[in-house]
Length: 156
Image (cartoon, rainbow, N blue to C red):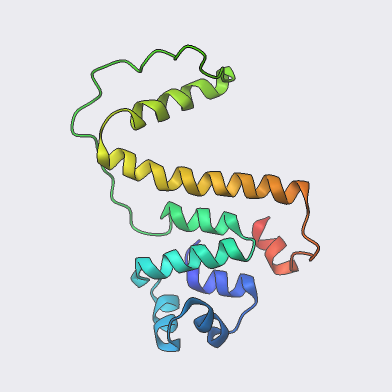
């Protein structure tokens, strides 16, 4: 995703004027965001995520959360963890072997006490959980309205 405003607007099949109304921004602002995607303010990105999720494109909301389309800042831990991951709790759920490492890593982050690491992980967990549960719901109860051809093509 190189240009989130333009690509989401086109995916939804909306004109620039209609899209401006949907996201609550002026036409001039949208032109700037479409010409210079990196200048899109965080509150507009949040609105785009909401619009994408409301319109049935949770995968777009997830993609917008990843910041892959922005210049990234890499945060390195100040000190490496010095303690081993906590032992499994009695009565804890048993995970498939190929999932165990992921659970251990997440548990280590969430129990580390590192506020920056925890605050970096939590929003993504919430968003991915919503995306997965929405996909499971849609798979169990397909929408009555067919997805537009442009949307099917974008989603692959």
